[in-house]
Image (cartoon, rainbow, N blue to C red; front, top):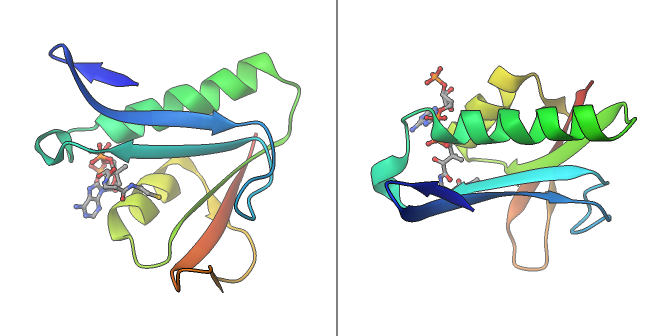
Length: 104
Ligand SMILES: CC(C)(COP(=O)(O)OP(=O)(O)OC[C@H]1O[C@@H](n2cnc3c(N)ncnc32)[C@H](O)[C@@H]1OP(=O)(O)O)[C@@H](O)C(=O)NCCC(=O)NCCS
């Protein structure tokens, strides 16, 4: 959980098993409280998760995914060094996703 000012404003999580078409380990983030978006918190939390995996496991790649049209998260992940991984795909709910990965 990401807790700021004693409020839970979002979460960042690491998945260690393949889930929703994304290989492990994968990192995912959500800043649920809009008042706390755009303040550098998401980037800082994602970077902390990348560093945790880097320093804990002997792994070469971290994976993630995002909705194909989610500009904020595309920019955030690009700024951390994530690259596209394969072609976009549509899930059972009709949502278009893009997988991404970063080499450590
Ligand atoms: C997407 C999300 C995780 C970004 O977290 P955040 O704390 O708001 O982002 P930050 O302030 O750390 O910004 C990091 C980078 O993201 C990009 N970014 C953030 N908000 C943006 C916006 N509204 N438009 C475009 N780019 C944006 C920028 O590149 C920014 O870097 P910069 O400030 O150096 O330009 C957060 O806004 C969020 O959870 N939104 C709603 C749910 C969601 O989309 N979750 C992701 C599901 S895959």
